[in-house]
Each structure stands twice: as structure tokens, then as C-alpha cells.
Image 1 (spheres, helix red, strand yellow):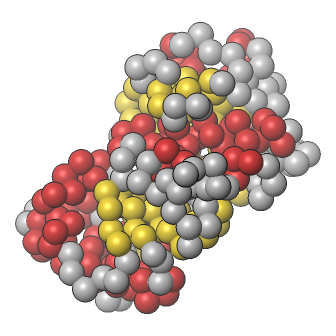
Image 2 (cartoon, protein in one colour; image 1 turned 120 degrees about the vertical axis):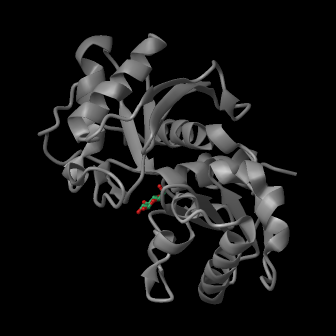
Image 3 (cartoon, helix red, strand yellow; image 1 turned 30 degrees about the vertical axis):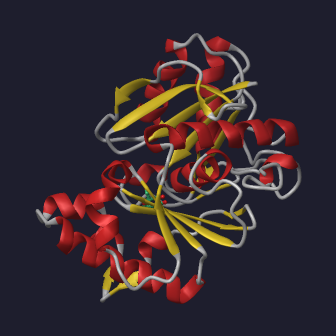
Length: 290
Ligand code: BGC
């Protein structure tokens, strides 16, 4: 089965049809630069460009770098504040539905999407207990799983660390902005992981975001954490794959925003921003795995 996934990020909006059996992109992804300011309307136009590039008509999943409940974007730490309390699922479904027909849209937090993909197809596959996927980029995103079940919108990047918002101390943007060496940045990540571990005692941390490609430069420098720490495996495609997984689950549950729903449409009947607790795909890591 193929479903379309779009990853809305601070620098790029990228998408592709996803092969949900393989957990991989079915075609090479297409990317457009994120407009500035990244207002909901400007971003919706870009999402349409990406979807139209493939002539896609069918379910679409989209990630968003903020809290998303019932298709409504609730926070916007690193994006245009116009997203706060916007019905993003209805906005995107309306935009995509204008010409292409049936594109029901599901929107979920970007780290939750990446986490779903890692738990099903990547570094968290088959892992029980508490697993925390952290994405390091412009901000720090989190996806918390217990026995493969996602607790959405955990926002652990905004925990307080030494009097600061944690992502303002330990994101990869901060590493670049402050020109931190790998050991200096690893030290901050270690303090952050120790704090998260104190709160949740996970069995496994999966470290995602673009920096996961450079895991060898910093993971060996992180000491004193009881949990196993591994790099994410899906890297660039995790968000797109996870968005498609959520859209497929919402389709099955009849929960996606229907095409043609206007941005000003009232509350959706039974929307979902992530797989519900029912149905086989909500248990993303097990028991289907060996
Ligand atoms: C946002 C999260 C997001 C993370 C990564 C944070 O600033 O609050 O929702 O997952 O950045 O993009």
C-alpha cells in the first residue's frame, strides 16, 4: 500500500509516496524550500506543490514542528505564530482537494512521525518498554513509546535545563550558532539525556535528526546514561514515512480531514493526529516483529 508523506520543516518541505510494507520512499523525494515567513497559507501552497509534483491523489500525512491535536496546530516554537490554533489538517485538505480530488490529510508532530517510523522500521523495531526517540535539529523533538505505543506531543525539547529551554542549549542549531566542538556539544546532550532519564527511565534512546548521520562523532563521548543509546536509522526519510503511517492509520479509522474541507471549517467529526490506540498499526514496534 502507498500513502503520501510530507515533512514540513524549518528549511525544507519534502515529500514522496511511501511504500508502507517496506517503510521506505516509493519514489525519490521532492523538496521545496520553506517560505519565509512560513505562514500557514504559504506553507500550504508548498505542500500542494510537493504533492502535485507526483500527481498524487489519495491520503496524505504531514508533519508539523509543534504540538498537533485533532489536526489543529497548537504551538509554533520555531515557525510562524500564525500556526497557533490553526486547523492545519482542514487547511491542507482544502488546498489539496481543490484540484486533485480526494486527498484526506492527517497532521502530526514531526518527532512523533519520525518516532513511529523508527519504531516500526528502524532503530526501535521490536523494542518493548519505554523507548524515547529524540530528534536534534533547529529544536529538539521527542516521541515517547511504551511497548510500541506512542504518547503523542511530549515536547521534551522544552524541558528546563540549567535554567534554559533545553533545545536552546543542546539542539544542533545551537551547536552551529555557538560553534561548539563535538565534545562540548556532547557534554550538553549528556546533561539533557541524564535529565530525561531521571524523569522516564527509558530502556532505549534513539537519537534522530540530521545529526544521526554523524553519530560516531558524539555518541561515544556520552557517558553515564544507563539506557542504551543508538542512532536513528531512517535519517532523512523518517518524517515522511511516519507521516504516511499516521495517514494510513487515520484512513482506516475514518479520522483524516476530508478533501475540500475549508480552512474555516468547524471541528472535524472524529479527527486524529496520530494512530489511535485501536488497530494494528498503533503498536508500531511489536508484536509483528520477531
Ligand atoms: C517543537 C516540537 C518539535 C521540535 C522539533 C520544538 O521546538 O516544540 O514540537 O517536535 O521542535 O522540530
